[in-house]
Length: 125
Image (tube, helix red, strand yellow):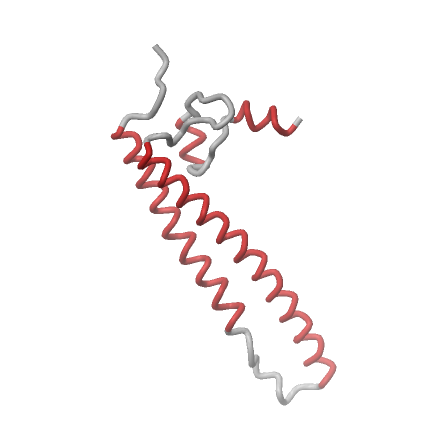
């Protein structure tokens, strides 16, 4: 008989993986946010005006890039938190298209996955 859900023990293993990833993701997010808010004064007051303009352009670019990365990181955190809710509901690891269990190997790599590889590939085509 095919399993219809992961056992409570397996769910706790996944929860530990997700909590670990969540901790790292939140730390990375805070780091990105601090680079956005604290990228003022780089000590270029005494250098040539041309260099200062170039450096300010680069700072703006990196601030925009940091902003994009921070947004992606925030989305990743939301996906991980949603996965924790699915663990509590005991629906974690079920493919939202097929209803079958997503293989453990995939969930260990992408713990917030909601689609099996087959369903994901089918949706791409």
